[in-house]
Image (tube, rainbow, N blue to C red):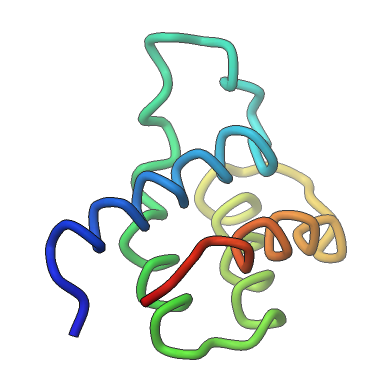
Length: 91
């Protein structure tokens, strides 16, 4: 089981990846929009900590970008974000 401090650290790391790598709406440099992708934190935390495949994570990101945010994104463009998420140290 992951304790609350590790959980918070992982979620902060996920947030950084979403802003620094994914950032489909371009809010990386907007101080008042740093929480824009927080709606994805819980699901990505779950996917990462339960052994989801790269394809499952890419699909989740693609669906968030296309269905939730209404953007036109290519599924294969999600894989750099998946690679960055995989670099997060998990317990």
